[in-house]
Length: 256
Image (cartoon, rainbow, N blue to C red; front, side, top):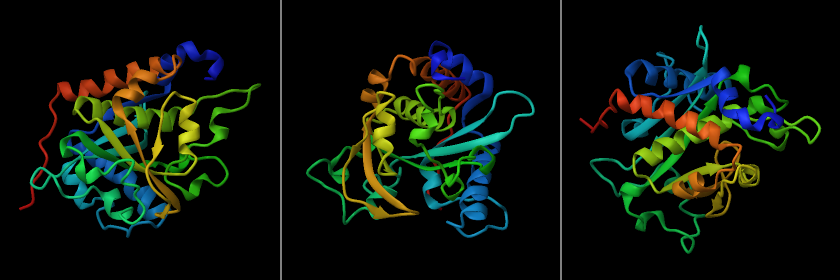
């Protein structure tokens, strides 16, 4: 599917992929399995676990998205998560606040002073190796580059990363989150500007599995300013995420 078929991008997405709010134990285990495959076995960012599930303490208060193929047999493709404030300690820093404490420009925004129920962090984006085919991409868990959009003569569309990002925005909107934070590749803002998405850098670079910069985006601004050719995909993603909520969202766990 190419950008020349922009009016059918929503149908094109449904033809190949589906997103799911990973609210059940089985779906969350699929997420943890993808993360283990990518972060532990392929990239060596985390230690290999006997149960082949990559889980950390932030998963207790996170919501997860799962991307898989839309036809049988459904093949797992990728995942990400929305890390929210800890129910028992809302003031506890989000993961990026630890990683970037020395480089954040608090004149732009100070996450510690924001209402904690209105902010969240996007993290643990991962795509399985089979779907990371470009030269050099196997060294990163998820990438978006100029090449993903093809050329003027042969345009194309990066369904996988865009589907994952839109899914987590849909989760955030449902949860009443206003601001999303993330550690991103420095050029991500340029690539997302093609979609009408404004990503603002809020501090200097840090070394975190490569050079990353702390960034933020406003959820309502993202939704309002999506380019017209992206909106059909957005509607599909929202419908699929809302189907997960219809079956019930799990409560966050508290420490024993």
